[in-house]
Length: 487
Image 1 (tube, rainbow, N blue to C red):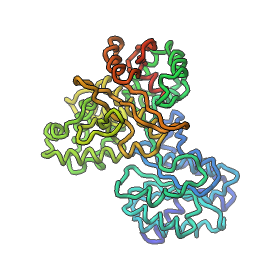
Image 2: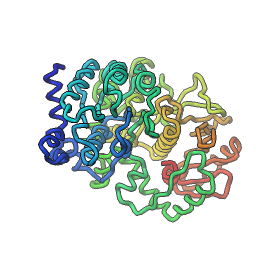
Image 3: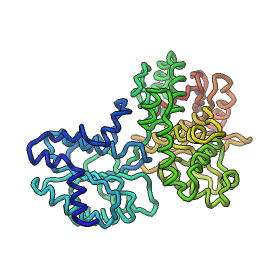
Image 4: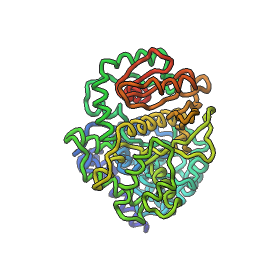
């Protein structure tokens, strides 16, 4: 892009600069911002806290890489962060630079850094906060940003980079994160996930108590017993809320539409489909995405036979299927659950399970393509519990989600499988193992699965539909109760 184009973009996208220069209201832009105005139509009050340290903390030498699916609200989160910074008395709005990078190249970042500093020269050498939106889609962005961090004044600024995919060739850790801990205790590489079940309950205003969160190795501690028993009176309400969550998912707009009208709009479902078609399957017809997601939902509770998937979808080769699946995972639309051994190590060459990263994605097929089956709540429950556990483990040890190392299933012998094996995780006192979990969305007849866990691990949790039974070595916990304890 030319310098005049970059200057115009910077001036247009940072309206708070003019207000600060003229003595006007630095928050006046909020009322007319198109992104925030669009959210108002489906706003239930949910706000992610993933950038709270940027919005409320001191302006230290900090770099954050924030990724997540499209339509999940990354750009809105940046605008919310900008508003909070503009409202702080100790921050001059000219210290804040919001840069949407659509249409740019990585080589433009150097000019943006120089022009941005020139346009805000009235605040002198004061540290800036740079919000670089969708920058991770630019080829070579990590090298360009590394040079700026190492050799220019940008190295003393706070920089937030967002993107909707991750490229394994982009050396984020090597170029940007190594040796740059700053003063923040929060992790620097972060994922903006869909709203959790806990978030949805709170936003929808359901009168259900929300228990304290527990670590995944502490699900059978005495504190877990107390919290689980405190929710026993709400099991039926939680069951209904869980089924609603399995229908709406956690994309903020989908949650709001379901809360207000009882279903997610076809317009938003088509918006999600358009994103996936562009990022995952651009070479095929538009209906390829609903077919693919429906096929994956129907297979998600079993190890995935990719060759059979390719044949059923008429892809022509397993390699074509592999490419689609890789793109789904790298755009945060799906996550692998690999087979692991008793020590939690991945079993080489074994088939893996694949879970869609939000329940609403499982409904695209049935809602948009006649003849495709409706998702099954039993399968959706297992997938959602896998996502809950994966997030909890990734919070404890950042990077495990993207390394495909946050969840794993175990073959226990006799043709049996355990959905979520015990994995090693860090604790304040050393290494511990997560409590093994089997998903069995039933209201009776859960003890057979419990005996498998007891025979292998002596204890564990069976996630049921409505059964809460803590009288055996393997506990029965309703799936929504388990989700709340982990979230």
